[in-house]
Length: 124
Image (cartoon, rainbow, N blue to C red; front, side):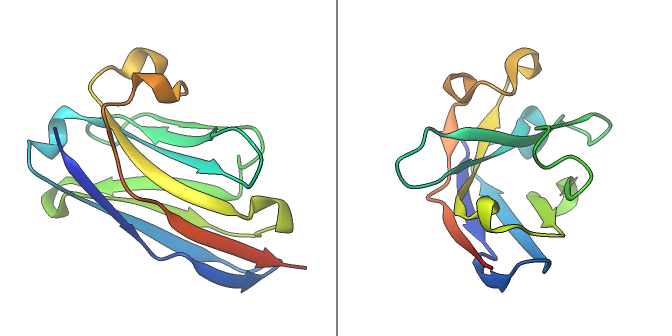
C-alpha cells in the first residue's frame, strides 16, 4: 500500500481559496488513481474529485465542478486539490485516497489507502 499525508487545510472566508496537498510514499505513485473525498459532521463521506494515473482524466462531483481542480505531479508523488469560490457548505474534513481501479473512482469502498484528513472550514 501507499502511505498518504494531507496538508493545506484551514479556515477561510466564503469566496476564498485553498490548495490541499496529498503526499504519497511507499509504492509506485503512478500505479494509482487518486481521489479526494470529504466528510462533514453527521454526514456520509462524499466524493469530491478523482484523477487517473497520468493526470489525463479527471472527474468531479457536481457540487464542486467549475470551482475545484484536481491535479497531480508524479515526479513529486503529490496530488493537489485547488479549491476556489469556497462556500460554507464546503466545510468538512478532506481526505485523499489511492485506488488501483479507475472503474469506480467515486466509490470510497474501492480505495485501498487513505490519508488522515485535513480540516477545511469556510466561514460565511
